Image: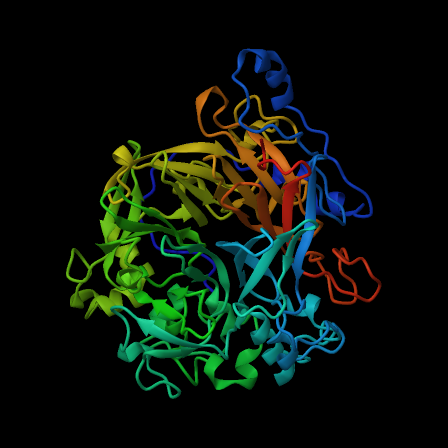
Length: 638
């Protein structure tokens, strides 16, 4: 079955809260705010604005100088008036000199292998230095998380899933994975360099990968195609990720369960493991045409996904590596920071209702002047899972075979078992079940770590705890972790809630913002985030449509008397979520991934909710990476 949440019973600290679903539905029905998509549907709200007008004059200057945009929902994107948003690269755009032109009515696996993939998510940027003309260059590393079959493929919606042919499935696999593409900053903005020696497609089925670390070679990773348990073809459902201090790209495998079909008998050795990860999810039809994606035929195949994949973007012929030491779960991302002692710490969220926050500390130190020594830093280290205590402390608990309950008596014969079943191991340690932990972003300058908790409408009143203080949490919240004296390797930290998202004018929602937050500035469902070169926090959302407005990007103050103030910066077209975001090192460009534009209830290739960004009849909406800049060339947000 598809387990959509963690059903373990790790303790929660009960608090009082009101049920809010009916209140919110009455105020903002989906039918009401989707009815007028041809024009912006601004929502008249109150709550913050009155308070803001009374205290604004007494507060310090905002860290963000842009003119805030308005809330709303329509068919296109919106940015502040002094900014530009260039279409950098779209689904189907060419990468190589022999890439075919994009023809959405005649898609194929062969074509998609040479084109930019679908549903761009994480964006990494690796600077290359200026070219001979003094133009800045860099590598964009982009994850393609998943495909939306009915929106992407023509003619399949009416008879789905029976309509899905073998070729359809191969095209979907080719659209998964990732892209490395060289870009250059010209006088007309950033442009892709078609045919660059760096350009590369990584896919769900064709790219050979090596399994490394403690789980490599485990009998539980062996399949008919790979009797060694050390070689995997492809990566999929790559959500967020990270760029390591040594310049490699991390692709986080998230909802891999959805790619599998089939059933296992209840007494099968992998049955409990698969159930904990929601395998099979049955979101795609690949298992109808390929035994690899049918657990009845290949029960170990799901164990080969759910890892963090490391890629060298400088070498398109290099073999990506699945680094098993970082654990197996629905990885949202893997952002890192160099600790004071030189070890590298990676923060990770398991994007599921009632799942956990993790960090991994390398055993060895990062050596910036000795690249060879960093090549396999991710194969040795310590994995921890977080317990958020009521007194404001975070206990980072060791996920190590032989420690506590992680023994053979509980089904863990080795560290490989602990890592393959990271979720079950964390259950036994008593980790805190969170409200969908997604991006977790450290700030090396302050020792702070921000945790995006998207939402959890299934949390009951008797499951409320200090770190997840609302039942039926439709709008999510952001937690700030403070590592002691900036020591990111610490096993005990402090935590507090930065903001509780949602409409502050509806008391029952329980939203908490700084009163300087305007009627445009509050939001719901934080997902991805970025810390810009000035140390400021920017948050992208996935699910803000629940509030009556599109997803977007907001700038959040994290210190001083404006702490907890949010300001709207970017608004996506209808149906889209916003991913990325990623700043260039100089802060002058913000790359943003607009994912699944035109989606919505009943949306199809033939009838999307928008045809952004091309707006041509017969052309479907195209997931796209935007490059946002100030018109005067100054830093974003200044």
